[in-house]
Image (cartoon, rainbow, N blue to C red; front, side):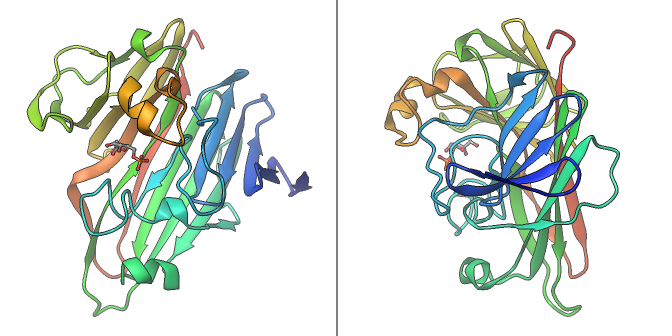
Length: 290
Ligand code: TA6
């Protein structure tokens, strides 16, 4: 079922949920759910690049397992809010997109409302812009303090919690974090990454983000991952077989087909005074071998 909107942006219902499909003339597409402003699919050069769990719950309430969930205004359980904040479990509004040189783009908005104020009293406007380039996908979050001039500043943490599709995580290699500070969330150990990251079992680490792009090598496939300097952390997560079996919305072997590489701001929360705005983005780009 589709309800055409001018250009390369169409409304669509996917598994019962209102979504927006971006289609570029080169054949690349992206699918974005209004629930959570969550990218669910990105097809570039004929290949799906994101992992959406076949057991993901799309009921307009639950957090959706896969794609690109947005964690805001709290990462994980580092604060009093629900895990990863409320942005991923609320409906967002489709906004007219401004001028862009992307092949196709869309912008969604979430502003404070009774549901957000029940958890968090702050006045804010968040905009998530998703753009398709030639072999690339860019997701940009902008957050503004919309309170009155004499309101107090507030803080937030955030992550673009990207689930990348891989053929086999145990044969996948993530390059570019060599020399970056690393906190291992599983063992609470701190250190410095040596060489590329490989995966054999559950993995959950927060790195200081490198200035240069990361490179994901998945067999013959290669993806370049870049994030804005305003996002100072990179999180790498794979649940491994044990946690995969315990997560109700992931098949027991789901961990094999996914790797989360997240552009995040965690260690140092962003502080915004009234009228101030922050923005951060992650860009995925298909490498030379596709
Ligand atoms: O970003 C990694 C992480 O914080 C992990 O610790 C793991 O819990 C994951 O996110 C998924 O969280 P979720 O609430 O979506 O199950």
